[in-house]
Structure formats: structure tokens, C-alpha cells
Length: 300
Length: 233
Image (cartoon, rainbow over all chains, first blue to last red; front, side, top):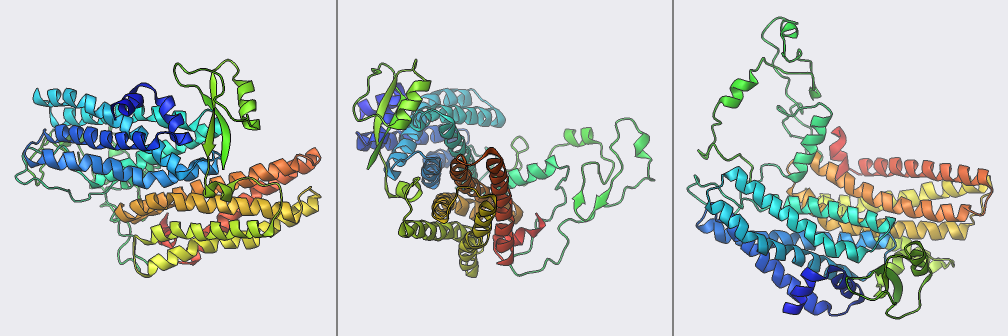
């Protein structure tokens, strides 16, 4: 076990070759699974220590589950990517590569856990803790690529396969992590939920971003696309209220937003329904049902 | 069943091969990167590789098996998308995906072959069948591999339009891998033709790709699949 864990850290190329050739796969995969459970649970517990109490146990349970669920969902795709790009592998070798890669990353998570704990213990805010935890997770993900990339080899097809695999892993990992929130937890909350209400997700965020890029802002989108075989009773976007002042009044003001042009397709990028002093809005405290104004809704 | 592949050597390893006869791909890679120490690995491959591996010889049974396997595997992707609505949607989505693949095979591939015949390209029906079988098997395999991820996103994504977007991305990735096989294999066959035929043949293949995309979209929309719900896309 110790030798296998040592090899994961010191010689990723050798580990990748052993996975591909089927040498010592059992030891490597066993050690990696142990590392995943231990490393992710320790890191989860430290993240949960921000809120304390039951959140420590919840986060320690949820982080390994999120990581393992991501692997379960991604491994078939990794395998078919390599086959489609003419890199013959057995499914067993692909599974071994994926698990050892995740095991390497989990060992780094284990190493970074004390650092994160110290920062949280020194009184880091919600945002600082979340940012540091996300950075640690990202760094561990980068390190885990060491084995996967060496297992793919070098060349254009291998690069394409690697990019596709990493993109899928990031997307699936984002979605599974989102489903299993919260990890940090809010100190002001009286009850500690095991899972939070969905509040959108990774794909919803991607969808909204691409609409924003096209200049369509979904402030008033109803998201009621009709289900199969049903007609929608309401338009997909509500018509925004007309501006209060005469047409063209705001166009002359320095720094003012252009006049609203609203269509049934939504409020376009050059539109703003009401004159809004955004600085004033920023300074107002956000009223949240949780009573905690320091933590955003839909956060960690 | 195994293949010999060349990989960068691990830290401290000898550059000498560990054993096994060097394959053609290994020697070509070694020629390009002579300065970098490399090792040759004897990598096993399974039955799934046999499904998508390139073949020179034509065997009717093998081609039929590849097409059938590809069509059947694509149903898993449809099934994953149908999990969003459940019930009858499972069946409709599971049927719509193979129907789209079959439509492309039955309608677009013969049209492409007739086009090649007009150009007098050196592509006979057997070779065309080989290319089709491999492309359909690759497409089906990739769709089946992406099915677990598609199910996750289809079920857990809140907005329906976002779910359709993700399903479209998965379908596009699979279509890309399938079309890549067509482009590579047809490109290899056209190498023996005059330059003008090669160019026209490649243009025709690209047009075939666009037509296949449109045809797939038409079938999926007409079958009231998850994609049809996103008609507002």
C-alpha cells in the first residue's frame, strides 16, 4: 500500500504504464481508492469546519461521494474517447488510469487540508474560505492530470482525447458538486441541511452565460418551457415595464443606460426597463431568508 | 489481443525497449522524437476496440454487426435523455436516437456513394460499407459512453433549455467523432484519385456531414424527443 501510494506521488509515468499494461493494477487501484476516501474526507471535514458541528461530518461524507460519482459517470466516456481516437485500451485499464489519477489528486488534498484548516481557524471569511478551498481543489485536479496525461501518451489524437476528457470531468464534477452542496455551510443557519435546494446548476449557469453573451439578460425569464405535449400558457419572457420618463430623456444623461427596447424574445443588451442607480443598490444590504448577509445564495 | 505502443519513458527509466516487436506506429513516433527516451508498452485491448478498429478487408457480417451495434448503442443516449421526463419519454427518446442514425445510413450514405461514383472516385461499395460500419459503430459507442453523463445532466438540470443545450453538446461530440472517421477513411481512399477528384470528393464529404446533421435534427424534432421541446433554442 505504502509503495503504491509512493509511486502515485513520485512516478506518475510509471503508474500510467502499469495501468495500461495491467501490471499491479489491483494494488494501485486499491491504494488509490483508499487515498480518495481518506484525502477527500479529510478535506471535506476541514471545509465543513467553517460551519462546524454536523457540517463537518456531512462535508466529510459528501466530498468523497462527489469525487467517486464523478468518476463513475466519466469513466465510460473516457474509454470511448480513447477508442474513437484510435487508442486501443481495455475498459479495465481506463478505470485504473482514472482512479489512480483521482487518487493522486486526493493525496494532494490531504496535504492541503491542514493549510486550509489553519486559514479557517484564523478567522477567514466565507468568501476567502470558499476561494481557498476551490483553489486547493483545482490544484489537486491539475496534479491528478499527471497520470492521465502520461497514460494518453503524446500526439494530436492524444491531446484531443485529453482535452475532451478533462472538459467532461470538469463539467460533471461541477454538476455533482453542485447537487451535493452545501460544503462550507452558513454559520447563521440554525439547522444544518444535508443537501440544499437545487437553485439551478452548472448547466443552468452555462445556459445563462451564453444568453448573456448574446446580450439577452434573463432577469425576467420565467423558465417555463412547456413540457412534452403541452402548450405554454404564458410567454417565455414577461414584457418589461415601460420607462417612466419621456423617450430619449435618459439618452442625454452622462453615463445613463440606453433606452429600453423590449421584445417578446426578452430584454436585449441595450435595454434597461427602469432607471436604476446601481451604486445605491450595491450599498443596500441584501435581505435573505437565512439572515446572513455575508454569504451569497447558491454558494458553497 | 494486444498492440505495442510507444510512450515517453518514466523518470530514471532506460530508453531501451522492454520487449515485443515494434509496431509501425511505434517506429514512426520514435523517428519524430528520437531525442526523447521512450518505452514500448504491450497494451491489451478489448472487444470494444474490435468494434471500431480500422479494417482493410470487407466482411458483410462484420459490417452489419458494426452498424447494428452502433444503432443499438445510440439508444442508450436517448434513454438517458428520456430520464428527464420519464414514462413514455424514455421510450420515445430511446427510439428517436437510433432512428436518426438509421435515417442517415439509409438516406445520406447512398447519396454520398452515388456522388463518388459520378466523380469516378476509387471507392467501391465494399469500402463504402466498411467506412459506414466503422463510423456508425464509433458514433454509437461514443453516445453510449456519454449516456451516464447525459443522464446526470438531463435529470439534475433545472432549466429545460439548458438540458437541451447539454444534450446537443453531447450529440455534437459524438457526431464529430463519427464524422472524423468518415473524413479520415474517405480521405485515405481518395488519395489514389487525381487531385481534382480528391478536392471534389472532400467537398462532397463535408456537404454530406452538413446534410447528416440537418437530417438528424429533422428526425429528432419530428419524433418529439427532448430536442423537440427545446424548439425555442
